[in-house]
Length: 565
Image (cartoon, rainbow, N blue to C red; front, top):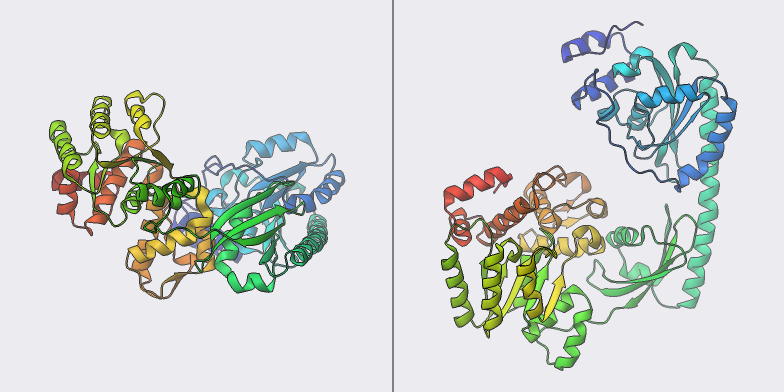
């Protein structure tokens, strides 16, 4: 087979399909559909941090050492990619061949998927989960046509999940019929070591689990390993598959030698305190559960000194106590962390009047200050100033003086206040309590509960629920837009699937949305507009009025910020 060049169009691909093996032709088509071109380099393929403590790396290292010895002084390379197609190890027979393939893009940490690197025996094996040889001209990207390679998938012997891909790459003229059986044997040896490692880890984890069950008779106890989940009868009665996913996320990366605790709300609504520690070298943990202290109702009759002690507890308790005591409150957090929702919770059953300090307002500053002053003089409930950090310094001083001189119950929501914002920071001295809302990424254990609350808020049918797979996908998401992004995601999912289970495949992908492209100031604008659209039920006339801008300005900013409503 002698193919002059990779196809530049669908027509050329169709013409060449008869010249290619079926699996190669299909890979070329997938590469083209992803937007890759034959003259592209691998520079666009991401380079990520590698985990050299993973079970795959542990199992494969002795095998790679042996292969390196076998291939000494040859022009062969052995490449190991993990379950995400990320190159985690590279062994060579000669130094100069390593320099050559690294120059062509084979760098540790690089992700070798077909959409990034086209047809090759890492990316295509990763895609098909089948062994494959890719020879010379069969590579989609021109820079790779000088090489040939054999790739073999590594699957876990017990779970059958893909663990990675083992590959032998070489200059096309160095092809040898002995390479394929050598690679097959190496993968079999890696499989054996994975199985041995899994068995020893599971035995150690099971022993620790049984010891804890014996010590904590009647208490819920679970053990979590990479591929196993043990639970005693008490745990089975209170945990479901969503809780399993959350517990994995919470305990991931637990350091050895430390006992950790965290208050959690299970999918059933039960509040518990989880206590766990790492018991195996592979990260296995054993958790035991105690009942968490019941949360006080905000209007129950309690001693004020008792309520003040709750200000050191959870965010919900802090908000509840601050509302009960009508404390002047500063609520801070990044865009999308739920500051507006926190103000609503702070007000509780009392009336809430909001004054948004967004830069979007076209209302004169004196008129805005006048309105705030009137609210402070006449309103019996909570007076809130939102997006305080967006005020110019002079306005921040005026607003601070107004608040501190009034006898009203007031609160402020703001982005983080840096030390350079001296006029804004003056208000800190007059806030009885400060509540910082963490990013959603750092609160993965709360995602199931937050998602349920949002589903109720947006009026989802009672039959709508997120599957364990969907919860797992949500806990692994980076959440650049925090709770606002989660709400948009759930709204889109419910629009498509108004009843029944929502699976991971049915969740819209929003990671490439506007949040990644906007400046901090634009994100604040984005959040302010979305907040008013939410409050007005999508009524743009009402949202524009609340923001103090014309409908024309609102439509313009929505278009510029990528807001669809």
